Image 1 (spheres, helix red, strand yellow):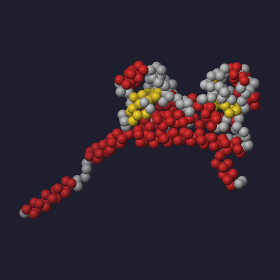
Image 2 (cartoon, one colour):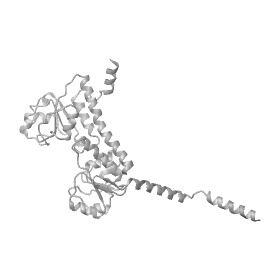
Image 3 (cartoon, helix red, strand yellow):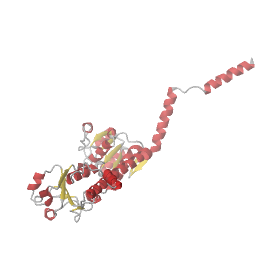
Length: 327
C-alpha cells in the first residue's frame, strides 16, 4: 500500500513540473522580454538630449526634420507639426502647433509628446516650460557640410530607436547619404573622361540678384566635390551685391526651378552672361538642399542632366567595363 501511495505522489509531482505554461504566462514572459529589450536601448543621450524611452509620440517644429521622418518611414510617430510642415495629406491633417520661433506651448503640452524635434534653438522660456512637463527636445540645426548633414541623420535615427537598433539604422543612413554623393562624383568624372570635357565654372543662384552659394557653403562643397569651379568662391556667405554679380561670368548657371530662361534674358544682371546667351542653364528644385534632405544628391544629379547632354543615360559602370576590356 505504501508503495502505491508513493508512486501516486511521484506521478503528481512529475505532472506539475511538466505542465504546459498558460497563454497568460507566455504573454507575460513575452512582455517582459520586450521591456528588457527596450530598457537596453534607453536611456540614451543624443547631443544634449537624454531620452528615457523610445519616442513614439513626436511633435516636429522643423519642416526639414518632418521630411526626414517621412523619408525614413517614421511619419506615423508624428502627432503634431509646425505651420510649415505640409508635405502630404497625412501630415497636413495633423494638429498645427506653430513654429519653432512661436510654438503653441499649451497645445504641445496638452498632447504630451515623448519628443519635440526642432532645427533651431527654442527660447529659454519655451525650453523651461517643456522641461517642467517632462518633454524632451532634440535640436538638429542645419548642417554646413556633407559630413555634418550625414551625422544629423545618424543622430535622428539613433534617437528614434535607441543605442543598438537606432545606432545601426543611423550609421546605415549616414553611409547611404555620403555614398549617394560619391556615386554622383564617380559618374561625373567618368562622363567628363568619356566625352573629353574639362571642369567648368558654375554659379549656383538661390535668389535672383541677391543670394548665391559662395565659399564656405554646403553647396560650394558639393560643387567642388563634383570638380566644378564655383564662380563665387572668392566671396563668403550667401549674399553678393548686384555690382559683384555683374562681374561674374561663369560657363554655366544653376537657378531655382521657379525661374525661367526668358526671365533671365530680360534681367539686367544676367542677360549679358555667356551662360544665359548659350543656354548653359539648369533649373532645379532647391528645396531638398535648403532643408538638408536625405535626397539632396538628386538635386545635383538633375543639375548635371541639364548641363551635360546624355548624362541621365550615361553609366559609369559601363564606361569602366569598356576601358577594362580595351574596347
